[in-house]
Amino acid sequence: MAALFALTAMLVHLATPNGVHSPTGVHSPHQRHARPVDSGGAGGAVVAAVKPGWRLPLHSRPNGQSVGVLGSRTVYGGPMTLPVVRKRGDWLGVLTAAMPNGRLGWVKSEPGALAFGRVPLKLDADLSRQLLRVWSRGRVVRRIRVGIGRPGTTTPTGRFSITDKMPGKSLGPYYGCCLLALSGNQPHPPAGWTGGARLAIHGGAYGAVSAGCLHASTADLRYLMRRVPRGTRITIHA
Image (cartoon, rainbow, N blue to C red; front, side, top):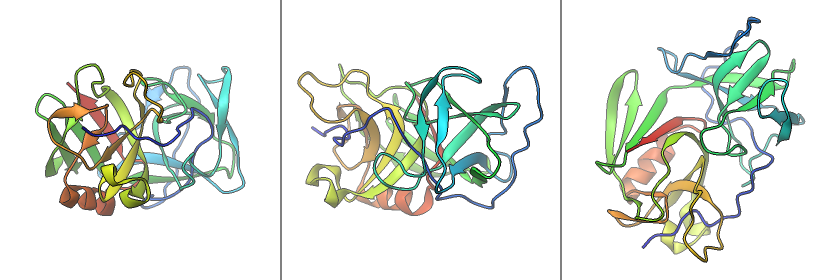
C-alpha cells in the first residue's frame, strides 16, 4: 500500500519560474468573455512564472474575491510555473494548487510581474488502463504503467499540472527515488489520514492500491524528472 503525498499542503501562497522554455509574450487583447489559451501548438503550452519579489493576489474570477497570494516560491520551497489556460483582458486563468480541483485561479498580469514561456510536453493518465502517456508535438513519446487510487480513495480526475519535482529519499522510503507533485488534491483521504492532501506521481506498487497518487517505476520516474518541466499539464481521466 502506498501513501498519498504526505507533506503539508495548504491551499495558499504559491509560484515561480523554472522549466520554462523559450520565453515569449502572451498577448491579452481586451474582450468581454474569457477565451482558451493555445494549449500546445508547435511551441508548447503557455506558462507564467511569478518573478522574485512579486506577490500577486489570486482571485476566484476576474475582478472577483481574493482567495490568496501567489509569490515566487511554492509551498514546498521550490520554483514553480503556472499553466495559463484562459485569459480575459489583463486577467489570466491559471492552474494552481491554491484552488479546489476543477477551478481556475485568476491573476492580473501586472507589468513586469510575470515571465512567460512554453512547455513542450503534456501528460494524460488513463485510470481504466492504469497508463500514463507523455505527449510531444501531437504524438506519444512514452507510455508508463502506473498504480492508481484504491476504492474509497480513488485518484481524482480532472486537469492539473506538475508543480514540483523532488528526490523521494528526502521524504521517506515509500516514495521511491523521485516525486512529482501535482496541483490537484485528494478530497477523500483515508480515515485517520494525517498527511497532506496533495496528489503526486511517485514510487509504489501497481494496481488500484494508493490513497490517490499515481505510482511509477524508478526508471519511469527518472525519465519524468529529467524530461518533464514544471508547469506541464496533466489530464487524469477514467
